[in-house]
Length: 417
Ligand code: ZN
Image 1 (cartoon, rainbow, N blue to C red):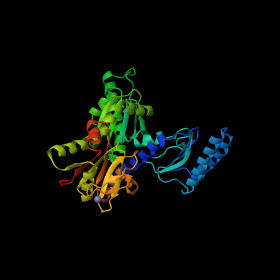
Image 2: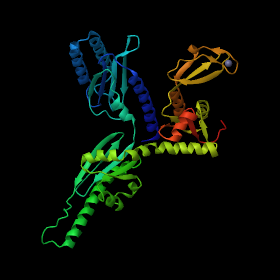
Image 3: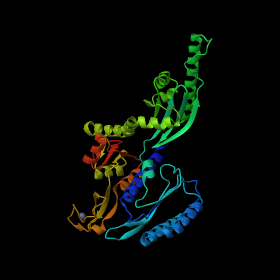
């Protein structure tokens, strides 16, 4: 994945997270909020047919209000589907539609269409409930990266991927390793030697499967997890069967009882802690670089205004944004032409502004309000700056949010700003 693509996907994930947070706040008074997940290989016409069918079935809903709301939602979905060609765009579409409570017994009809989520939608889902169905999207965004999975004992092995939260079994093998009981007439020594050979052959076969899959992707790979009973997985790893370029990627070995496809899932469960650590490791390294510069160098910046200024100068190598940051920025221009900005919580109303240069008042409605993160990323993209979202699941990540306003930058050179 090129840097450009990963930035876009980071930004896209941010956009999706925002929408999901909003959607989760909504509630319908009845079972009237409709969610549809459409995979990219499903014909739009068949979705339209499905929605039409649901629309006619909805006429059986007893409550008049719920019936009307569900049918309105379905009509709205149908009209949105007209904008698409034969098939949905890559990875599919998710549509949310329904009459949500807007307080005081009133409802608002809302429809949101999310195109091309960060991962493929695997199956078509039609869901009607008092809440929108957001979990499948949330799982896609809970990005644990890309990991190679191997489970093995002396009888069978499975290899596959962990993408985000999704386990994908890819290949399996079973061995011809004889059991521990030798047949009559065979010398114990010969039997032991043949058995070791068979084990060695099997480990080579398993490594071959893993190498075929993982070597090609080694630059995208965040790690390899190996599972199985003892001592098989230890023998396998100690024997250096894996390609030398993969050796360093092994994140750990884990006790797993099953080595069929279900073992791949058990492996991911067993490695939960190691995965959580690995997930924040990149963030940790970036924050460590930031603190090092902050204390002993001068190639760091923080806070919205300073970071923004550095971004505009093109001096920011990496823009660091806290994943928990939910702020808008309002740009005011006073009658004397002074331009100033205020960062406010996304849920708060736009305040009036007093120009700090000349004391002139600028009313709230003259302020130009936008998402603070979008504002910064727009500048970053123009200047070739890489953007990284930093989790708050570790101490220095929390500090970025609490103590540095959720925005910081690693600089290419010192600017004195
Ligand atoms: Zn002014």
